Length: 118
Image (cartoon, rainbow, N blue to C red):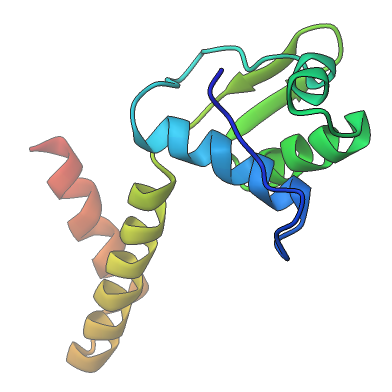
């Protein structure tokens, strides 16, 4: 684990820990199904409070990037946070274009489904 945090930074520690996990995912060092280090282990290595790490993990869970299960720990469920944001942006553009052309939600959904079937 090569995660680092800067306790003197104005960025809260839990945000820094979550950013470390996101970087590992984006770099391909954490993949779907991989288990994250325990919150206790991360807290010990980084010399920060256990609840700080848990807060970071909860934030990642809320973003849909990890799954938290008692007794199982934290498991990666998604691996490309940048890709998710990019995809959301593309979908927003697609919906805006559909509205401009008068395409209904039903027709747009049908078009998307047909693309998936190709």
